[in-house]
Length: 438
Ligand code: GUN
Ligand code: ZN
Image 1: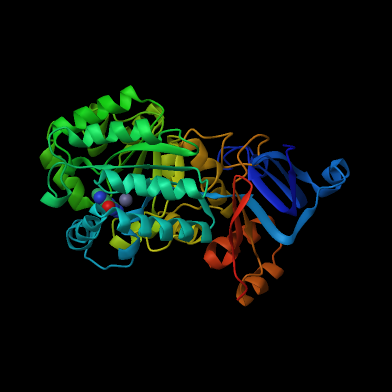
Image 2 (image 1 turned 90 degrees about the vertical axis):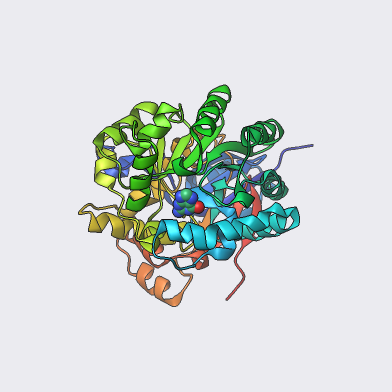
C-alpha cells in the first residue's frame, strides 16, 4: 500500500526550546505565518513555509486550506481525573471536604464497567473538543476502570497515559485496596496496556495520606521494576492536607520527601499541584527529573493556593499545565492558561502567552520524556495537532483583528478562548474532532 501524504496550509507554531530559558523568547519557537504541515503515515514529514514546501509536493496531493487559522501541536494535559467528569463544578470548602462529599461517592460508581465506558467516551470527546490530544489520567481503584479508559482511547488512536488509583487507608471501604491486590492489579495492567499501541501506563498512588507505608513501599518497588512507566500523584496542594501528612509521616523532612523516601521520584514521575514546596523540595524535583503539573483552575476553585512559577523556574523544574478536572473547572487548556496567567500575576511574576503555549505542548512532552514523539512538529513526531480559530467568536475576531504581534494573538486565544477556539483536532494524522458551525 502506497503511503499517502496529507498537507495543511495555515499559520504554524511549535517549539524547540523553553522561551523562559533562551536568550530571547523568539529563539524558542518556529512560526510560519503562511505555513504548510506535511504528514505521512500519521507522522510529521515537514513543517515550514508554504512558499518553500509547496513546490516540493507530489502532483496528486490535495492541500487542506486552513488559512486564517493557527496550527499547533495538540495540547497535553498532565493531570486529570476522568471519573470526576460528572462532578465538575461541585462546591466544597476546600480539598478534604470536597473529597469526602463528592469525589469518593462519585468514584464508587466505577465499579460498574459499563458506567466507566460511558464516562470515558464522553471524557475523551470533551478533551478532543478542547484540543487536548494527550493526557495523564487518573482512573479509580477499580481495575476495570482502567480497561474501560484504554479501550476507548485505543478506538480513537490517542496517545494517553493512565493508571489505577492505589489507596488502602483513610478512604471508604468501597474504594480500598486490600493486601497486595492494588499492586498486583497495577502489574497486570502494565502487562496488558503499557506501550500497547499509543497507550502508556501510569502508576497512581492517590496521595500519601491514602496509602499505608507498606503500599507506598510496594509502589516504589513497582516503579523501579518498570522504569519507563509513569508515576502520578498529588503533593502539597492544600495546607490542611500538608498538616495531615506531617502528622502521618513525622520522620519525613517534607511532604515531598515522603515520596522520595519510597523511591517515587524519578524521570516520568509527575506531581500534581506543588504549591507549598520549599526550595529544597524544588531542588529535589529538578535533581530527580520529576515534573510538576500546575493546576490553576483547580487551585483557585478549591482555594488551595498559588503556584510559584518564579521559584520553580529558579530550580529549572520541568513544568507543565494541567486541568485537574473535576477540581479543575474547565477541560480547556486555553482556560487553564488564562488562570495560570492570573496566578502568576498574584505571585508577582509574569507568564507570557508564548511560554504558556510552550508549557501546554513541548514543555509537557518534555515533562513526560516524550519529546520527539508528541508536543512539536519535529520531523518524525506523531501528527497530533489542532486548528485554532482566531475568529471563533465576535469578540475574539475583533480583538485578534487588531493584534500587533504573535504574543498578542496567543494572549487573546489564551484569555478569551475555550472549546469554541478549537476548529479541529487531529490524532496521528486523523481528524478526531471538527467544530460544528455555530
Ligand atoms: N488529592 C487526593 N485526591 C485528589 C483528587 O482527586 N483531586 C485533587 N485535586 N486533589 C486530590
Ligand atoms: Zn488531581
